[in-house]
Length: 201
Image 1: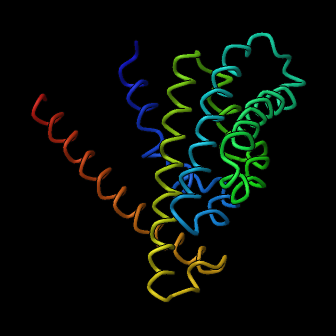
Image 2 (image 1 turned 120 degrees about the vertical axis):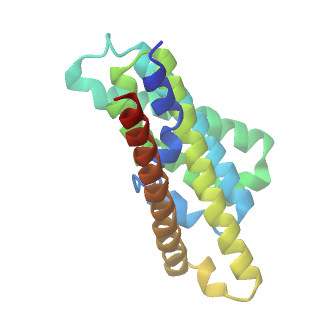
């Protein structure tokens, strides 16, 4: 096992966070992050589809002709979205009323299709599942953080932040803060690596 690749893949959801860094899946992120319950539910559903679509895309990558790869990926993704939708409709009717319409839209969520095309189709099943899990957790973290903040602001009387424009304002601020902290961490790691190399030399 390539330890470096394993680490980079496992931490991909943090360092290449799908919302704060890659800026993917903005429609569900803004629309269903008005409260933490809906945010967590949609994030978990998306993560489930991401993991299993990555698994099957990777497993079938050598058998899917290049000319039809995107339609094939969409069929795979749609299959797992349908399973999630059936489960929620059957066992979680209240949740279905809240986020049901957005479950169907997971099929065209840029995060899932992007990971299928850029990663799962080029890597082994193990790495594809790890990538799906990492990106899924990263998405859950992002949308729940956004949902929690917007919910608290709304409860404090600042109802504007529960609206779509307010959601974009909070998202923009969170993206700026996240990337600032990430840049500090990367600079620290680069300095640490340089010191180690200098010591070895």
